[in-house]
Amino acid sequence: MCGICGELRFDGKRPDLGAVGRMTARLEQRGPDHEGVFSDGPLAFGHRRLAILDLSHHGDQPMVDQELGLALVFNGTIYNYPQLREELIGLGYHFFSSGDSEVILKAWHAWGEGCVERLSGMFAFAVWDKREQRLFLARDRMGIKPLYYSEAGGRLRFASNTQALLAGGGVDSDIDPLALHHQFTLHAVIPAPRTILKGVRKLGPGHCLTIEANGERRQRRYWKLPALRPATPRSDDEWVEAIHEALRESIRKRNAIADVPVGVLLSGGLDSSLLVALLAESGVSDLHTFSVGFEDHPDEKGSEFEYSDPVAARYDTRHHKFLVPNSEVLKRLPEAVDAMAEPMFGQDAVAFYLLSEQVSKKIKVVQSGQGADEVFGGYFWYPLMMAEREGTPLERFARHYFDRDHEEFLRTVRAPWRGADHTSALIAELLAEPDSDSFMDSVLRMDVTTLIVDDPVKRVDNMTMAWGLEARVPFLDQDLVELAFQCPPELKLRDHGKYPLKRIARGIVPDSVIDRPKGYFPMPALKYVRGEFLTFMKDILHSDACRQRGLYDPAYVELLLSAPEMHHTRLRGSKLWHLALLEYWLQRNLNGA
Image (cartoon, rainbow, N blue to C red; front, side, top):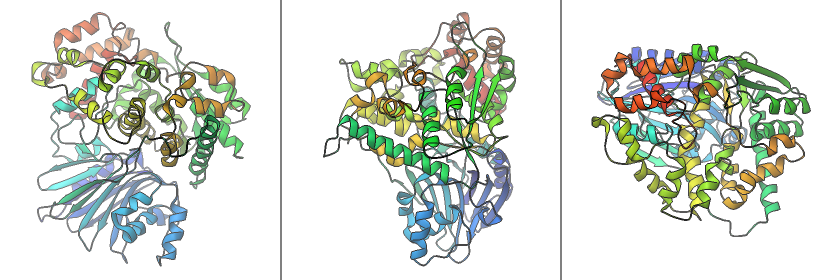
C-alpha cells in the first residue's frame, strides 16, 4: 500500500522533477517507510512506500527491471501474486524480490495490458516501457485504490490523490458545473472520470489506459459486472453455502497475504463482527480489533460499544476502544478534510480518520466491512425501492436516494452554476445498462460499480492511508461479488437485507448484533448541528472566501441556517453540513480561490 505519482511529457521536454518531487512529498502519509524517484526520457515516477510485503529494500519502488526495460509504481495488494509468480517462473522469468510488485512487472511483460484481467486484488499502478516509450495505467475492478490525473501544457501527471496534483502545480482549479450537480444530488459521489475540479480527472474502476510518448492514448474497460441468474438454479441453502465459502476464502486471502499482522476494524455491526468470527473460525489467534465511539446526542447514540464489546469478548481479541469527545472532533476536523482527495459528505469520514490514527500506532493492516451493504442489500432504501411499482427506474431510485431533486439544486446554487439535470441523465443511463435481470439487480450493480467507489470505498482509503494504514475490504472480493450478483436480489433483501450474511452469522455472532436495526457509523454532532459545530459551519458559509466564490444562493444558505437540525436528505445527512464541507474543502485546498 503506497502513494504513487508521475509525469509524462508529450512535447519533447524533460519531465519537471521539481513538480514530481512536490507530488511525492505530498504523498508521504500514504507511505512513510520509503521514498523513491525514477526518470527516463519524457517520464518521471515518484513513490512513497508502506511496507507490507517483502519488507526488505528489494521491495522498494519505483521498481526497475533493467533486463526487461520496465519501471513500476504500484499502490495496493495482489492477493493471487504467489500463483502468478509460479506461473511466470514457469514461463522463464526470474525474480529478485519476494513481493507482489515485481509480479506486476513480469505479468505486464508477459501478457501486456491483458495482465489486469489476471490480477486479483486492489491496485492502482503505472508501468513505463522504456523501449516502446509507453505508459500504462490501471485501476482495480472495484476502484478500491484511487488514481487521479491532470493534463496541461504538453504533459500528463497522475497521483494517488488530488492534493499531490495540486502540489505539482498547473492544475485548472475551476469548479466543474456538471460535477457540482452530482456532488449535491448523489451524496458527494462524482463518478469517474470527473472530479469537482475541472483540471483533475480520475481513471474509472475496472479501466486501464495506455499512453504513448506522443500523447496518443487508448482507454479500455476490462471488467463488467453482469447481474444475471445462473443457468442452473440454486436453492436458498445452496446460495448461502456458496456465499459462505467465497467469503471464507476472501477473508483468508486478506489475512494471509501480508508479512505483518492484520487486524479488524470492529464497528459493532454485522459485517465487521462476521469478519472477526470467520477469522477466529479459521484458526487466527491473537487478533487485534479496534472500535471508536463519540459523545451521545439526545436524538442518537454516539457509540456502538454495546455491540462490539461482546464480539471482542466472545473471541478473546486484543480489543482497543477509543472514545472521542466532540471537542476533539471539531479540533481535528481540518486534518480530516485535508485527507480527503475529494470533498466527502459522509459523516463517518472524521470517525475513520480519528480511528485510523489510533490503529496505526498498533498495526499496519486491517480488514474492514465496507461493501457488504451494497453487495448484499443492507441499506434501508433498497426495500423501499423494490416496493415501488410506479414510475421509471430512474424515478423509483431517485425518490429514495437523491440528496436533492433538481429543482432544489437550482435553489442551492447561484445562476452561473445552474444547468441541466445531469444526475438524472447519468443514473438513467447506468440503470439501463444490459446484462441485468431486474430493476433491483441494476440498482445494486450501479451501487457497487459506481456509487460505492466514490463514497464509502474512497472514504476508507483516504482516511486510513492518511495514517499509513492499509484497509482491506473482503466483501468487495471479485469472486464474492460476481457470485453475489448471480444471487436473486429478493434473497439478499429478505429480513431487512443481507439475509445470506445473517444466516452465515447465526450461531457465531451474538443474536443482538444480527437482529439489531442497521447501524451507521454514528457521528451525531455532524448530523444534528448545534452549538460550536453550528458556529463553525456558519462562519464558513459567511466567510469572505465563500461569498467571493459565489457558489451558493444566499437565500438557501439562510434557510438552512435558520433551522439547522431540520434539513436532512433522504439518506439522513445534514444539508447544512454538505454546503459547509464543500466550501471548507475548497478553502483548505485552493487557498480561498
